Image (tube, rainbow, N blue to C red; front, top):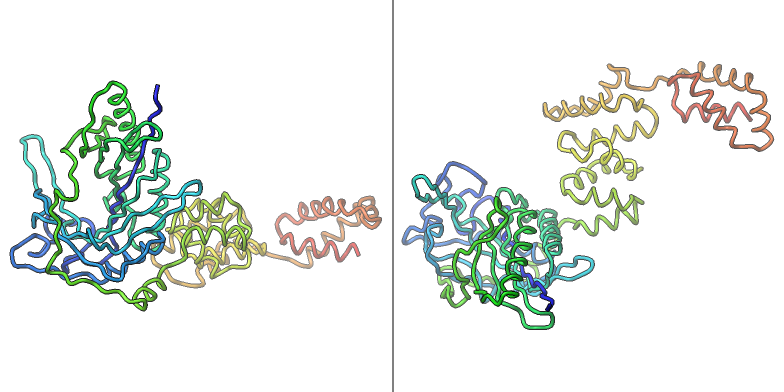
Length: 470
């Protein structure tokens, strides 16, 4: 039986984090009652003209930079013509001949996925279908939202590779503050182009599966298409180039329409939007606003801070957690490993309930043995309450530790007396220690700590015991 090789290309659609839409001043905030965030422009009224959103251009350039793209110094827009109710103008303002970003790549470790282009366009509206009785309604709140489309070359061959690529691109866009990455809200969604062909042969007939908005859906849609196309080729059933939709309930794809080619859209230059000229100074100013990307943070955490591979991956996996970690280090940067361990093990990455500065001081006190660790849960409850109440009192932690007796109280006279008693009552181990058997120190330390019952920090007990033994 001949071996069939899947070939996959992705089109990732990401809504940009702009305050307004891409060609008008309507709010770009998610939600709102239907058709409440529209104007004559994004609703397609005759006579209205588009005005390009400068912030949207800056964000697509940032996206292109982090994906190693070339940025076109001259970029222009085109009208993509098709008739569908979610497109009120009956054309979409998009880019064909001179997109902003071209020829990029994203490394997946074991493979490289080439980026053909990233272009800036307007999003379509949303249709709501009802089956009883049958009717469809159009909500144009999303119409005109600033959208980038990331188009890959057909370099992917498995569902796992596709998901890893989408995950990495999503992380890049999040860290660069380009897109919020909320797939469940449609801020980031994916079209999958997939075909099968015998190994070494030209690419087969492709199907495009539209609007997948979760990694699970991407995986299931690809696996179903591989199975469907394999059966068709094996049984000599002709495949047609078509657009399909994925049914999440059944796990199957179904045909929507035959797949269009570029000429079917009758692209032509948009005469209402001038060609945009970008200078080196423009690009340098935009590049300077790009934060440190997750791969660089990972290397810094591993090589400069000595954080374990496991914990470093956990920290960078969530941008909010990673930024919180950086915020804690600004308050207490002397021991990054202990800060990381505390976030992973004690907070379990649920960082939204706390101020970074509070956690920094808490870890600092714990490391200095000034706070008894058995009270960590109680302290975190109080710090969470502080954040919920938007309390900005800088001394809140210290005040509560005093009021609730969370501090370790050190009675130095008691320490001296207890340790003197431990030495007097253990002459054998003391003589062994003086003879050079250093391991007996642990036994003596344990006896002193047990007798003091938390009345002193381990550091004070150790220092006092060493001094008295000398």
